[in-house]
Length: 338
Image: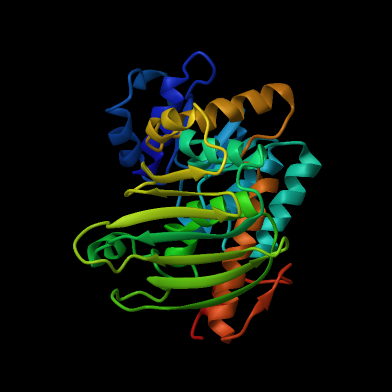
């Protein structure tokens, strides 16, 4: 359960942030979660979101079904709360932009849970780019070759539907598409090809896309949940005139290549300093941003473009043509019966 990962991170930062309340329509779900919490008697339980948002909380964490992210985030902002929301932010680009505007108007933080950005291996690549070690970046690729069983989708019937969830690009691939956007910047056009091959779902379980960035570089995306038996691989590769890097492993936990024209003494350490994905750094950053009045690394401002890229790919798959950005409008519901 994704909520447990957020709670674990909060528990590791007990001096900075405290869990004070839970909200779920099923009270037994909350009681089961609290069996694993160190001080369950201190936690208030709510089954009605409006009562929950009236309570004395500063930061609301939304880890519900995808279709409810927009409505609950909007309610929280109306109650003047800061928000951490699981990805994706919304199933509509218009709704995502509305939340951005609300966050600005209410002066509250909306952070999207794209915690892969904080990995030390990702930050090493960010630093190399800032130092100009790549020279001109030519192209980047991401692959997500994972397995999801039919049981995974059947367990929660909203999964894989256009009205309530979307497919592999919006759910499993979003972290890695976000990294391409982080390194290459604005996208000006996309062309996507995808479909449903293995699972009895509406949305795509295989999606591919070609991206053209404003700086002239190219991005290639491949994502699937059709791999037989188990997750096979995740990869991120960047290629420039003076160097290239490639992260592989199931969760980008293996530096396959780290090579630059200007090799330096820190490169060996960088290749061996690998972190596993965690939410703790994200929460530490968000708490710091709330206290200082700044923006966290995963602010709605910085992640909105990632959502727009994915929605543009969906529109391209739907229409069979290249889609230019910025995107006028799009909702996953547009794909219902298409």
